[in-house]
Image (cartoon, rainbow, N blue to C red; front, side, top):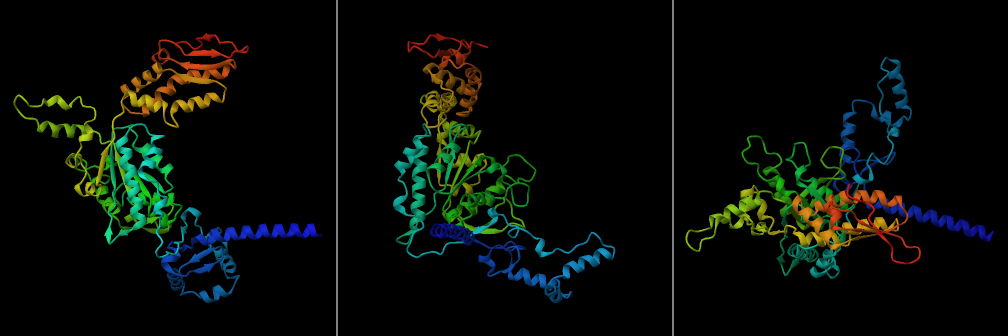
Length: 496
């Protein structure tokens, strides 16, 4: 009996713990009105109806006023009223008309979890939102970025300092009545140089909500596409609908050059200058109403108010043709005489984008008010051959390491000689798409190897050579040695 009682007690304890956890989860979220979708924090206490339906005071009174011409008191007091009414309608020649019964509405008010708002935690005085001692210093942030991102030393230094200062600012608020302004950033660099990858790596390293949005989908309010507020809505989703957590997050807006002013156009520019103007208040800091769990506002989605004052905005773009604008400006500075600089001096300069100024961005099509709200402007270098070789070999998740891991599962060792890596980098330089070209090249020549190796269990090692990359030979295949002697090297896969 004692054993039986102990088992019962354990089962009851488990049931109670499950109930407690479910109650805690329910208490984290606040009710949303079934009709107007406003949260409880805005409209006050709600009426609770069957099946977890909540209706706010305003909507309940409007509903009662609407049906006041009917005897709604008798309707509410009589439980069988709806069934009798539906029977009478069907008998009187209206078989397809039915009144909605509240009991037929199933689910938690028709509101999925992703459209529920988390309750705001009560604010404690004298306690900062963040602990300044736990924020990693800039040199540690950069050291972690070095493991994944090759080169771009200046960009990594700038982004590390900016993130560190941003969270110091959020943690302290004010210092001796001196308010610290927000330092939004503009990142400029050619395609494939690592702009998006740098921010994605930063998101993994920092325990803060980060949203990555694309400026190409943004349009002026009232047109097809994403509203400007959808950028902040993505951040709220990344913070698990916790408004307080989202208000100290980071937003990266990619392809920012695509919202430049359109030149020589007579049609309405709904995805250009108007989007820049709409983003001004976001960058500066304002209270924005954003939809919860959706991209656009509508009557069926609850809204949350987020203050963007403490949200760090990082904008990035390739800015094609910006180099030509910079060259035109520099050529105007050339003079006449023996010491004059030649006009074609800047044509062969690779890193000319580093000479960018605010005037060049204005000429490109960015409005002055928008650029003024992005005080930190820095550029990323175009990748050269040595950097591409390092990208292939050194990062923690380098593409060569990925293929080596895949072949390890088949108990085959994959090696690349230095000539092969240089040949891959040379091919990537010709494509002129940055690090993105490396994956395409490697996928192409690894196809035959990945296809042939699983056929033969005797293969122990594969060495990729320069000749195989250039198409003049094949890789070196080592057969496993049973006796422990040096294996015979055989060229198995020849040129197709």
